[in-house]
Structure formats: structure tokens, C-alpha cells
Image (cartoon, rainbow, N blue to C red; front, side, top):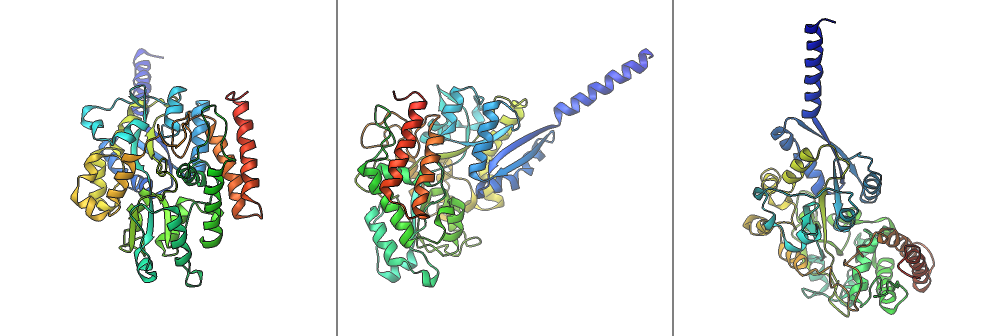
Length: 436
């Protein structure tokens, strides 16, 4: 081969490699909820600003997302470059070296992030994920139905008040069920709600010696109320309903009361997607014997696995998707009612946002008062409100959730279910070395 021809081959290979490097494809795994779908819809703007980066989306239901991204980071398979994960995974995965730390530039304005949300994604002083939206919990109730029934609820209702209202508003013959709650089993599904119910009844997952506390009066009272509400005043097939299913039911006018994530307010008050827009009161999450741990703290955030070979491109996308500029882009294209909230102080300072999101004050107050370090009436050894931030909780929470879901489907008692859940949890904690 002549020198000139060899040189041409070398130049050609170099140009090809340059194009491969420059033409980065980011594979993004995300959950199939409304804000993430909007992000995917608007992501062409990022590609326009970064013509050398192409985005490939993998959109999954919440349970499948958790399963697939957990497997990917644990095995360092490198299937994804950006993952949507939550406040539970971040501290655990950061300590295991599964995800990369992030140091956003000053222009990102990390100080604008709401303190509880930022802290939930920070480990040893470093951010390991950037929050796309944050949330706590709230009570949503149909004002037209309340008025017709002559019922009033306080700004922070009690669970007894909720039960009374659900019974009086339950009208299945008219297509309206008294209450909708998460029934789908999973640590981030039915157990997210049941955990905060147990907290406010004075319960906890584990005592200071890491002994499971599921077979206790607090848990029995909370789970008995939960099962009673759904079996007597809930929709049929409640064991199959998670956040998305209940959002659809409530938006269609099928539920009088719904207690769930504050992010729902961004959708149920939009007349283009909700039949009950303008007919909903937003209240704090119900309390029982203590307000401690009565509402959760969560954020869906963007993180990059250690195995990605495109960390610069991944961080560029993560910063763009969680920036003030992205929030303004959503406001411009979709309206202020559609922006992802729960992350930035500047969002709540926007008059248009507050006007179009009547749940804004409830949401911000709930987030600001959620304390994962002091979430139970008795002292607990773990950090977390609707979860215990230990690696074993994902397995324990899901197993317990499957047991409690039996109450909605089988002729089984609360006592039997919680005794079984206690034994499962006890065995898993012993196997993990917490107990002897």
C-alpha cells in the first residue's frame, strides 16, 4: 500500500471515529408519568442546541423502571446513560459507587433548589442526582360533592374525618366512589401510602435495635383503616391501582377523595385533561395521633450510572432538563400549569405558576415540613419517611406490600397479614445481619 493511500485510510478512520464520538447517543430510562412524557416531547429543543447528541428514550412503568435500572447499575451493564431514580436510591447507590457525582456550574443555580429536595440527593457534600420534580402528599377532594353533602374538612383533616366524608360521599350508583388510594403492591406503591399512615398512627418500620415493628397496634390501626376504606368506599379492583390509575379515575370524576402525591395537582386542575378542574380542594395529608411522618418526601431525579462512557453529554442533558430554562420552556410551550414543580424556589415565586396551580402552597408547605431524619414518634434508626433508606428495604417493602394487597382480594384478616409481614421482615433483617 502506498504512503498516500495509507494516509487516506488513516484520515478516513480518524474522521469516522470523530463522528462516532461526536454523534453521541444518550439512552435515557424514565418513568411513564405526565411530566416525563412532556420532557420527552420537548427534548428536541435539547437536540437542537446539541446537534451532536441524540436521545433514545426507554419509558417504563414505575415498578419495571426500578427493576431494570437497579439491575443495570448493580451489574455495571451500561445499558443506560441517564436514569430516572428517586430519593431512596440516591444515597444507597452513591455509597456503593454505582452513580457519578455531579458538580453543576454556577449558572445552574443549585442554591435555588428547595433545601429538603437538594439534601435528599446529596451524599458527603456532593450532588449525585439532579431533581426533575419533587413532591410530598396531599388530600384532594371534590368541592362540589362536599357542598352538596354539607360536609366541611379542615386544612389538615384527620383520618377519622376522611373516613366519615368518604362514607357520606360514596355513591357508586352515580359512578362516584368515596375514596381512591394506592392498592397496587410495591414499596413505592401501596407501601408509600401505608407507611405514612403507620407513621401518623405512631408506628415505625424498625425500632432502634432494627427489630421490625409491623405486628403492633399502630400498624394494625393504620392497615385496618386503609383496608376498610378501600373495601367499603373504594373502586372495584383497587389492588391494581397505583398513582397513574387513580389519577385517571379522579380526573374522570370517579373519586370523591384522593390522597396521593402533590404532583397530581399539575394535572387534575387542567381543564384539557380533567373533568374536575376547578372543583377540587387541596388539603394537607390526614393525621391521626401524631403529625410526624404524615406526608412523604420524594423526588424523581436524573442520575448517570458509573458505567456510562458519555458522562459529559449525560450531565449536559441532566442540567438542561432540570434547569430554570427548561421550566420556562414548558411554561412557554405547555403553560405554567404544566411545569414540573417541587424543585426550585424560583418556580413558586412566579405569579402565573401560583395562579394556575392552586395546590402550590400546600405542596411547598408539605415539602418544607417533611423531615426524613425525624419521621416517627418513637426513635428510629433509619432515615426516611415512606421508606427506610437501607438497601434491604426495597425487598422488604415489596414483600409487605404484597401481603397487605391480599386484604383487598382475599378473605384474610389484618392480624394474619401483619403477622406474616412481620415474619418476612424479621427473616430478611436477620439474613442481612441486622439481627442475631
